Amino acid sequence: VQLQASGGGLVQAGGSLRLSCAASGTTFGLNAVGWYRQAPGKQREVVARISSDRTANYADAVKGRFTISRDIRKNTLYLQMSSLKPEDTAIYYCKLLKHTKEYWGQGTQVTVSS
Figure 1 (cartoon, rainbow, N blue to C red):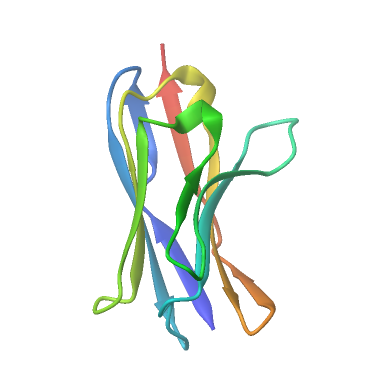
Figure 2 (figure 1 turned 60 degrees about the horizontal axis):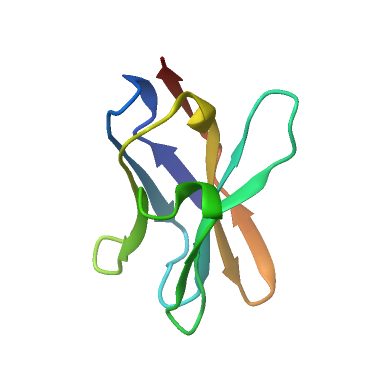
């Protein structure tokens, strides 16, 4: 099982990025999925999640700016990020929770310059 995250990069404050997470060896299906991030010197934190009941939840810091979605046919998870701020700078990870087992992507760096 592999989750391959991509789409990170350097962007100016106020800009947008779309992260992708492609799964191989498994399927996202309707399992719980999420995006997390870890900034230097900080703990990993949840950014956005879709529960098994298809409910989307967001961290307060990103509400109204980020949107999580998945394309079951493409077996890909997305995170659309808009109005980016320097404090969004972090490594972003995707996660799949399937049959009580967690699968993590390798992370993609997002850097927002002021």
